[in-house]
Image (cartoon, rainbow, N blue to C red; front, side, top):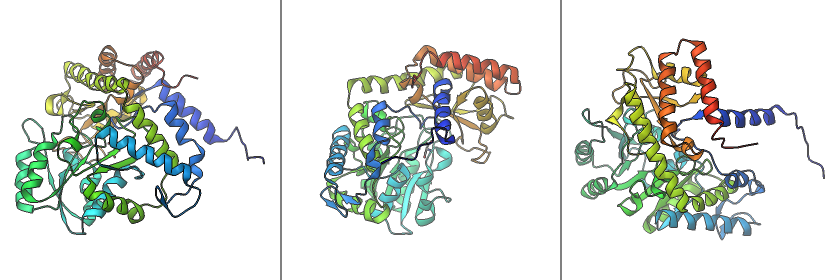
Length: 415
Ligand code: DSN
């Protein structure tokens, strides 16, 4: 047979351009990473051709003998990596993983407690614009105005008053360790189920840099596989044996159709990579790099929410640096200088989420490409120069040249 082929198709050209962009600019989006060639190979494999609704040995389609093995390997590796009794590796994303958990455990209108979006939480933790906030009665907790750490007294007070069915821990823009233990104690006191959303920090947990919620009382842990964990884009759910059947039924047939078998294969490869001593060193370096970046940014006069970081990211509050500089304006200038990151709300942000007063800066990707503390000092200097010189196109072009020179020493995907 002959396949249609158009080597000049603009999409192929665009893929080449994106490789070039990733190789020559600095990736500081805290939820991004560079995947290994093995992970990329699996996501581009013929496993994408298969339909396998159901679970291993319980499929609705024939020809799944290979896929069954793939999914079993992925589930076993996920369980081993996080010391979890049960794993579901089918969620297409972290948002789907969370939604599947809610649909499994809650009835519309039920009360749930979670970290507010403007305090560092996630859309799926009850934002009114998300299905979670539309279907369920989410009551938000936040960070303290003082040290800007999660206010556990508030979590306890809200839980005692609201008697939620579910308590959600986890964040997308929070730079500190989240101790699962006090959440467990509060959940026990009010009779709630405890979900830890480890989307951002799954790789840090696997690498021993953050307490493992599955070993500290979480009933369920959802996570994404593509952030600090450095796997393909996707989600997964870990849970106790008691919840396994309910969770599985909620993912399929409750919420999703056929699994993405090529992605499940890539997840399995990433789980194996994350179980190595090299990955442990990598995740320790992610944290050291974030600390070095934090210190250097503070040295340039930037205020960090909570004053620093324990994990893979820092959250910069731009208001004291320059009241006229929104997160959005800063991000657009940094884009022109070849530095990719995202604007982010800061606690009690007076600006709307589309504009914001903050920047979220993460080190997972730059650490994968081999950058260490000295480069973080350089990167902080380049960020500071960009913020100061944001109206000066010549300065931005000069910074972009320096960015390119730096990146040329740490090329993630050489030709
Ligand atoms: N988009 C993810 C992040 O950047 O944190 C959350 O969904």
